[in-house]
Length: 363
Ligand code: F6P
Image 1 (cartoon, helix red, strand yellow):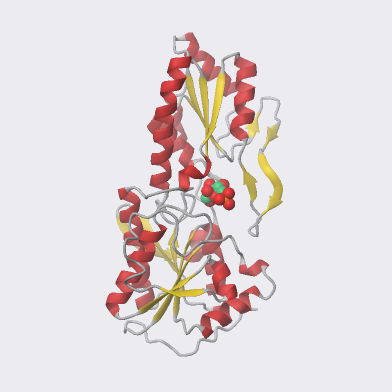
Image 2 (tube, protein in one colour):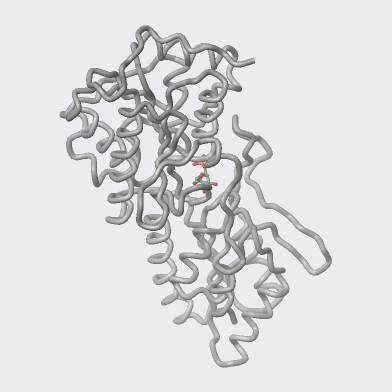
């Protein structure tokens, strides 16, 4: 049964004087602060007040608010991370969580919420909107680029840039030492970061969850390179790739069995397992680099700063129009709005034709 939202007063959208809350949830991501700045700038110009909510949905469950005035948003554009903090809290998994969200929203006198996040954070927003009419607008964030209904999420370009630079640097060691260098990159369920940085960095083999070539096939590609006189190789593997063998055996490498409040296992480590396998099967000296959270750290690229800024302005405009249950999205070069339900219904995976581009350079 849907809950009814009880807000203190009924705001008139399109006029100023609203109180707009903003939260950032899920993994941190370059460009979050640029979104916060853009939402605040556009809202403040209209005469609306912007309130920061600390630590994602956790801040609404527990009522953690802070002012976001002109002074607080100054200097934010190039800053990595999020000044609001973040968490992977799921109010639907906290005792009384949804009622506490609705109550603290009302008690703080908020009229609208901008939720900046990926599938989990926005999935909560979509469900709250559907069940209670909660006045939420979404902004698509994730380095993984796996959200549907938008061509790109902000943060992805920065992650790809960081990985490409790492691959370039690893190339020099691979070449000097005649080694196989395995690079493990993030992307929980999808291989977007692996495919894009692998193509950009000239990887010789790329392994992703969506198109799981076998370990034997990967070794054959490396051997083929050696036969044609290239005695070093770069292998990019996505953390979510399941080690797949011609016997039919498949194995997902996780760090620990525990899952988070959204049911995700912690990935990481497939690179080491794959590297050991490659060395044993080919006899070539192999080294492994796990890029990990370096991919999410630091300043956003110019492209991500621009995208995050455009998304933030759009979100503020959606709030002003009273267009709730919507998400800012990129279609081609246009910023549009799509339904939060559509954006979070399923993940956007790497299609076969993208993987074909990568495969053209294997071996
Ligand atoms: O969703 C972004 C992401 O960086 C994934 O690529 C990765 O699997 C996960 O978050 C890591 O999460 P945490 O920062 O909690 O270790």
